[in-house]
Length: 114
Image: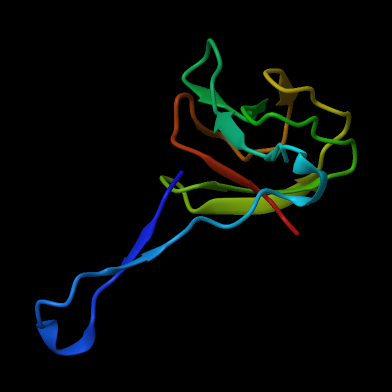
């Protein structure tokens, strides 16, 4: 439960008005939200790599063909690609050869393009 306190204008000593929480959704159903959340990694046994790893850290499967934008801030490299296969929650996918030669363990960013 939650309440909202509305303070009267002017700051007088009038007690605040209680606003009740909104009613439950129709039919009393609980709505569960799923979210898409990505992480990425640039790693290899060698000091320089062109491989990119995408990790699904969300609660929903990422479908094949999803548009992903990536960036390597340290080198300025950026681009986009289509996810080659679906990726279940908690799974990772290697995208070999996506990057120009970048240092392994470089910082990366990835996000879904809507």
